[in-house]
Length: 510
Image (cartoon, rainbow, N blue to C red):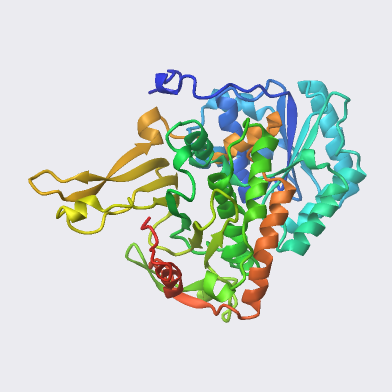
């Protein structure tokens, strides 16, 4: 189906949003994030006519580029990374709004040049002082940039009717103390309502669909509780290693890199209470309540797992161990695999364990939520000669790849016996709607431009997540949970299996 032909299956699936004319300022405009994600996402939003007529982009970085160079390099990036092919006439229109300012993040003169450029763009594009500042930089530059914007009077709207917003990439701190320090510094310049802490997982279609699935259907929410649910698993598997980012990963690790943000945010959407509306604060209020109800991990040795991949094989190809990666200490104790058992102490989820796991160099790239339901109280068909214990009903929300939802239930095998076997009902976005879902950054950038904060993380949730995990990080540093090793291409360490088997359960095979 061509881009010009509307798909009737998508009719009415989304309320069209309108965006004010604005300028998006990307700090770190020469980096990978800008080339791989941000500019391709903005190009696709422009292609879909979701950006306002008065829209422009200003790249800000140290390299001595000009507008022409910036446009040429961003064109190459869109040609390589865009989910849709570049169309010359559409690109030409989009590229006229791309500009570049050279300077270091601590140079007041560079911020003055940025301010002058923004004034000119306000006049040329009618942006009325609306500005979205995007920090696509290493985290150690966040405070410097916020201070520079404040000192040079760029953090407040240039017009009484305008707005300014700040988008901050993860990681938001390394632990509770550093996160609080960062928030204090940024808070001296920007108000909380101006700060958009981005987690690209929350822009994925299946993550967004968790709320629709739960609260937009009458049959699931009544069984979404401790009476019917046995356990919930949130899993992220990656086949890749550190991909040349050993220096960064040595200071992060799986717990900081994935669990503190991605996995806990997904957990909150699965566990939160119903909302009266899907506006930003209504959803974020309920997510914050989930974080507040999570029981602190008291026995780190029994309720957590930390491990690191050794050499092995992925899809028949031999790969080195983590300690042999470039930029990694040969004696490193940084975890590339983390698993936790958490409990939520509220009326809905008391006694239901939530298992989280993430690992690199696993056999499959997949992100999913697996909800296992309790078995029927009376094993009727086993009594009638139907064979083994019934397989529990299982609901799987596939976040990536092959976004979709599957439901496993028991069905009678044809024949004279009463044998019951599990079967699956499967929904896939691409098959059902005739198109691939948009990139997460497309949705999140558009929401930030519009001012919809629903899918962005509020400070109280960030603080609660670090409050939960910082003691685990400290305990690991003190050796309370020894580091294990697992072969690349396996499903993780023995400790992860033992974590589940000790509860009489097992990990769902992704």
